[in-house]
Amino acid sequence: MKQEILETVQENPGIHFRGIQREVDCSSTTLNYHINDLDFRERDIRGYRRFYPQKIPEKFDRSLAALNHDVRGLMLYQMKEGVSQKALVGSLDLSKSTVSSHLKVLKEDGLVEEERDGRSKTLFLSDSASKALSRFASDILDEASDGFIEMWE
Image 1 (cartoon, rainbow, N blue to C red):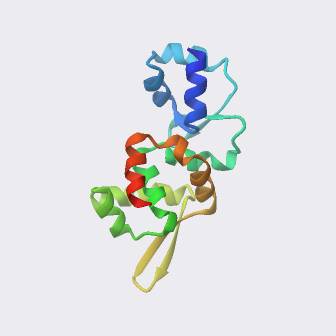
Image 2: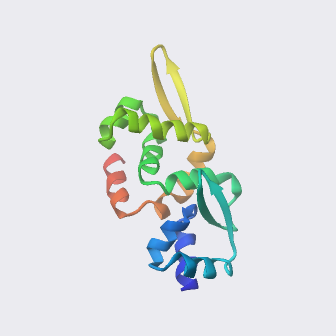
């Protein structure tokens, strides 16, 4: 069980407690017991217990937490080259208010920057989000996301 937990966190840095629990299919009591014996860095981000291997720098914590969120991870990936909010809404097939809500969180966490040109604005990744994406995205995003990403490359 410990090896399975260890591999899950190493493959998904920034994964939250329930995510680990779903991956290894165990009770929260069992997971708490085993996770205390493992050498992880734990951090509370937006109300979720998130886990990181010790070797990953803390400056990537918020970026990795966002990448471990299905919608926010895909949004960050699309911002790699710069994108408008309207384009995000269309490509993700989500409502404008849902995309706006996720963008607010990403901006508060310092992962997104915007560049204005008159009335329009383009959204870009911050430096830390860009570095985290290039280093860890392929390890974190699941197979469905990988297929979605390949469409955009």
